[in-house]
Length: 110
Length: 115
Image: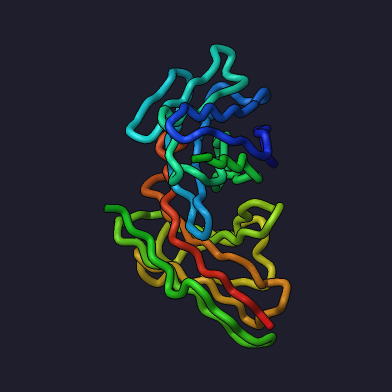
């Protein structure tokens, strides 16, 4: 079952920061938050994941609230190539796989 | 660079045909997965494998079988293709099942049409 809630779509101007929210109010203490994206006609691509602390890598930053009930994926300078569906996933301990819901369709506008 | 490849990007088959979808990863990963993706339904897990010759049913295994004879190769088989199996099929692999290291690497997908 999906344990996350994301807006179905968002727009972002090219060059600006894209902030994608995710609600996971029922997350358990040992469950991680993962983010993937899927560009049209390609397989999903791993972006970042975290447990409690904020994380940053070459692609994005992940901000997790102190109560861990929500998080935000930040693409600091969105480009047209960042147009994709972004999936926020809570990985359930003991689960066999990541559950991909329907995600947020991000459109970067020139 | 991490690589998961799938044998075909596009495939058209007739109802009743036996269909083989091949997936190969070059990362020496233990775990491999087959998903299908349909509009409005997200990705759904069909089968997965944690080791050679091992397989486990996912959420929607009916009408499918799998084979893992070698570590790097995981095949999905549609024994008798039906029109409701028209879909995008995605293969993935992971190095470990550890919850904090669960980065799945996906192939480009095979868009199968059954007529």
